[in-house]
Amino acid sequence: MIDWQHFTPVSALLGGAMIGTATSILILCNGRIAGISGIIGGLIKVTHADRIWRIAFIVGLISAPLIWQMFTVLPEITISASPGLLILSGLIVGFGTRLGSGCTSGHGICGISRLSLRSIVATLTFMLTGFVTVYVMRHLLGLIA
Image 1: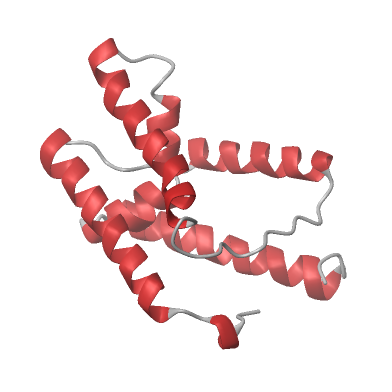
Image 2: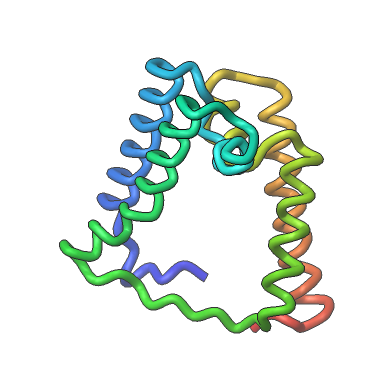
C-alpha cells in the first residue's frame, strides 16, 4: 500500500537518477554490470584489483542511507516475519538469482537499459512471480495483512 500522504516523487526521481548515474559510471569506467548478487558473489573468487571496486561498491550501498539520514528522517522499518522465514526467503532469492543468472539490479536496471532480451524476460519473470506470490500469500492464504 502506497502512503500517498508521504510520497516524495522528487527524492524518488533523484534516487533513480543517482542509481542510473552510478551504474553508467561502473559500466563505462570499469566495463562491469552493477548486479548486486554478482558483485557480492565475485568477492569470493576474484583478484585483488577486482576486489577493491567490489568492496567500494558495497560500502557505497551501505553508507548511502547512513549519509542520507543526516539530511532527513528515514522511514520506520517494521519486519513482521520470523527469522526462519527471513532466512528461507533469502535462500530462495539466492537460488533464484543463480537460476536467472543475475538479480533485479543486474537485469532490471542494467540489462533492460541495454535492451537485453534475456534481461527483459528475467525482469518480467521476477515481477510476475512477485505479484503471484503476494496475491497467494495475502488473498488465498491470508498470511500477509
